[in-house]
Amino acid sequence: MFLVLINWVVSLFVDRFIISLDLHYLERRKVFYMAKMSVSTLVAISLFALHKLTRIKVCFTSKVFAYFLISNLTLCFAQFILRGYEITENFRFVYFFTAMFTQTLINFYFVCFPFKKFLSKEVRVNFNFNK
Image 1: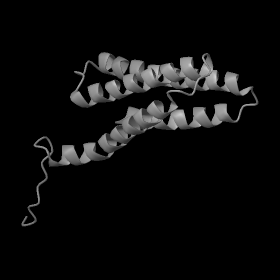
Image 2: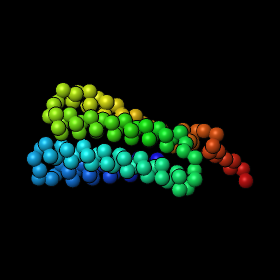
Image 3: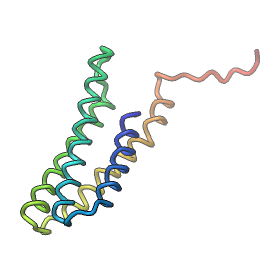
Image 4: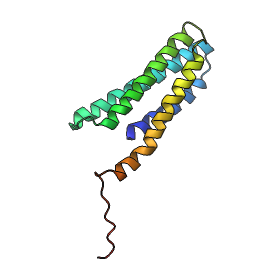
């Protein structure tokens, strides 16, 4: 779950930095989507590298996060081609709702994960106050 937070923070800073650059808008679009793809790729590589280095089995949560990263990477690649080179806005509506749906799922999963762990059998809380 720590990588979700890192991905969000790094993306936020990179996005704001690229938007503030003094470039032609087409060049800024290309740099913007290339940076978003790079951040997603680096986070996915670091996710699996951390699991490999620590010899921990890749759990379901990590796989879900990787699937979200892959969907985000695919959306950014499509926008990189369509808006950076083809200069078309035909799929902007589809991109907007797909990106919004993906980000909503990521945020929902990020918020619900601690509650799921707390309520599962993995974490047991002892409320015995009669000691």
